[in-house]
Length: 282
Ligand SMILES: Cc1cc2nc3c(=O)[nH]c(=O)nc-3n(C[C@H](O)[C@H](O)[C@H](O)COP(=O)(O)OP(=O)(O)OC[C@H]3O[C@@H](n4cnc5c(N)ncnc54)[C@H](O)[C@@H]3O)c2cc1C
Image (cartoon, rainbow, N blue to C red; front, side, top):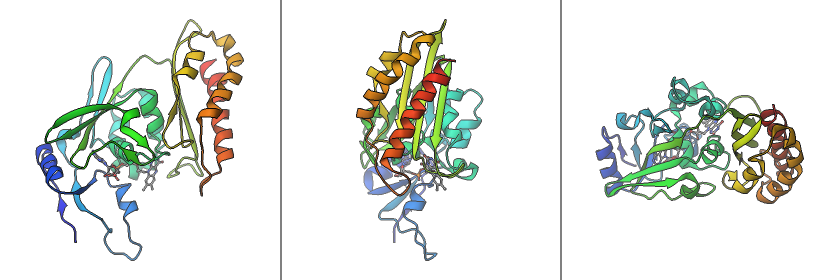
């Protein structure tokens, strides 16, 4: 038998987190599946449960001139429906799961789950998102690339909660996202590709590219991006071979029940080409 804590305030949640060994449940869409029992019995939680999903303090989206702050209990649907959240942030969110799951699931949950196929992760990597972690001892902020250390592994400590995700915003003129799954909804990605760019007078001023499901964490490489920066749209095709060669070295896809490593590699590089040829050059 486990205890279930449902605090009303963040202060209480952090106090409980500091005093007990707890499993955090936010929307529960990953946790409930992970610990389900097929015989109709309640889930088999290994620890006391701390349910934070209805913490009102963390259910807010704030937008400043150059960044957006997304509270940890904001659901994926709330993010999609917010009038001022840029479309390039919501591109991958719209492709996640199904409406019912998006009504419960959160960006923070997708981040903390840290699955290599988590659909928000390429976007968060490409946009240099930052995670705020809180405990009774204070708060700290980590870039997403530090926070996630490997597939399913993060620097979250047992007494901490993720309270907020900060995403820098900019005037991207190009946004591109493709997810390859076995079906249209409720599909875990076999491969995914996210990119944004700023183009001015036909020249690439900035570009950010991240691949999902082809390595333990999302793959992003500034060296490749710099190969494209400063390039006129008429010259982009000439860069594709160099980029393919470098990205092949960086992708380390696995064979698993959903797909093969060869397919994942092949389709990821096709998506790169499609982005450069159709997304960036148009
Ligand atoms: C049918 C179905 C379809 C799905 N489809 C997709 C899909 O297409 N793409 C995709 O990426 N995912 C998919 N998922 C997975 C899941 O819905 C997402 O990962 C979702 O974003 C998880 O959010 P949550 O709030 O429900 O997380 P939870 O299940 O509540 O938590 C997930 C993990 O994060 C931890 N956690 C959550 N919030 C915090 C916090 N604030 N502080 C510290 N730890 C925290 C929990 O302890 C747990 O380890 C699917 C799931 C289901 C059941």
